[in-house]
Length: 171
Image 1 (cartoon, rainbow, N blue to C red):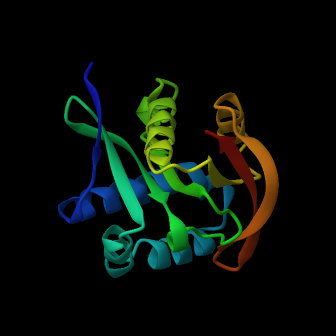
Image 2: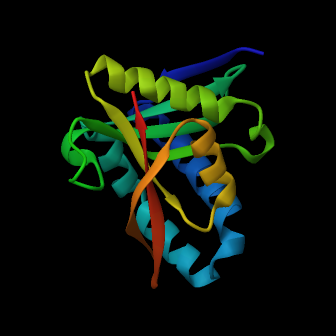
């Protein structure tokens, strides 16, 4: 088993977009209305919007590949690319997706460790992320990784204003 984490580029847009949609649906569709899921996917995963994220110099996408097949990816945001302005000297993990068949095999842990190394290399003091309060599996994972709850924010999914728990990991 050869697991590799590589920086994604513009040429990876279609693969990332398809992976993101598939994994978002797998994780959240059964917990939300079809209308809200459809609305979110139409907005968040528009090719133009996704391309803009890929080209933002303060956001970096990383693909996680197992034997050259993508099994996960994460996006890390710095400076003004972060979705919350109140966390100086930090980096945000905005998305971390692992394919359903690979969950529980340590891939998420490797991506978080990789994100920690990226943030440390920039001299930052901590990582933070928002995780839906209705996703106990993800919350437990982040707690095992050392993240601690520091607040909440609203994540708009269609017409549903959902609460995300903001979690922080000191580096």
